[in-house]
Amino acid sequence: MAKPNPITFHVPASAANIGPGYGVTGLALDLPLGITVEPLSDGTIHIERRDDPSARPEDQRHDPVMRGLLLGAKLFSVSLKLGLSIVVEGAIPRGAGMGTISAGYAAGLGVAVRLAKKKPTAAAVLDALITLGGDPAHGSAALLGGLTVTSQLSLPHEGEMRHQPLSFSLHEDWHYIIALPDVQMGTADAKRVLPPTLPHAATRRSIGRAFGVLRALEQGDEDLLRACLIDEIHLPYRRRLVPGLDQALLSGTEAGAAGVTLCGHGAGVIAFTTVPGRTPEIAKAMVHAFAQADCEATTLTLQSAYYGAYPHSPS
Picture 1 (cartoon, helix red, strand yellow):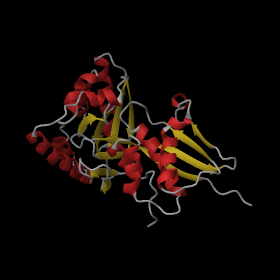
Picture 2: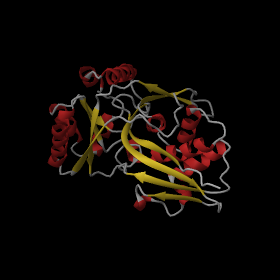
Picture 3: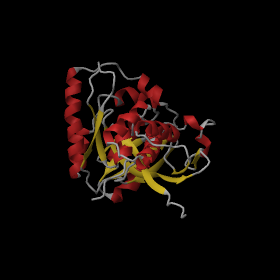
Picture 4: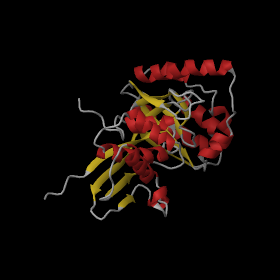
């Protein structure tokens, strides 16, 4: 009997928040995890993390890919009794706000979806990812690719959280420069500095700007993005966690970026431009700004990713 072909797919890195879209706006970046799945016959589930072997937990039950797979198998009625081999390759930087953990959850859930006899909805998969502790904004981008928004449908008093991932058009000319300062900043620390509430006026301004960001990214409108990327929700409170952040934001813009903001919760910084020729100067300017604060930084220049862990229906 011929051996079945392996299942293969990719899960993108992501930027979340995108200025005022805190916790809801996600952008898939073309820096993927490659997932290869093959059946076993000994009843074991083996995950090989070639993407970052040093970060692999001693107990694989704590691995995000494994946790996503096991929850997906439970929710989507997938039998794992024969066993699986899962190889993860790629290089999404950790601790940079590029959705590393959410990508791992999405990968495991993506395996379960492909093995399920009845394909679950993208909303059901996103709810599972968030249940595991994944970020809603990073999660939608990791699952669907492209530009996404996560709408929470459930009310605060409801016991079960329900979300709907939404896809938006994205102009093909955007290029992204990610500056990666050598700063250790955990998600818990980044959340701890945020205030519990916001003034109504700031909320109104932020909602309007978030819609402006979506339109700017859709149309490739640098002027509109520059005007709407201003954030009052999380960036002002996280400035002190990243040495040199203020100057990096300013220097990237002065070097030609349409806008610069934190990537996810940080410490990475993302700059936007529709002109490929500007990317080297923007990267150089941000690295220099961090160096002035005695903080070393490297950069990545990326484009949009239009693939995700959730399998797209054939057109």
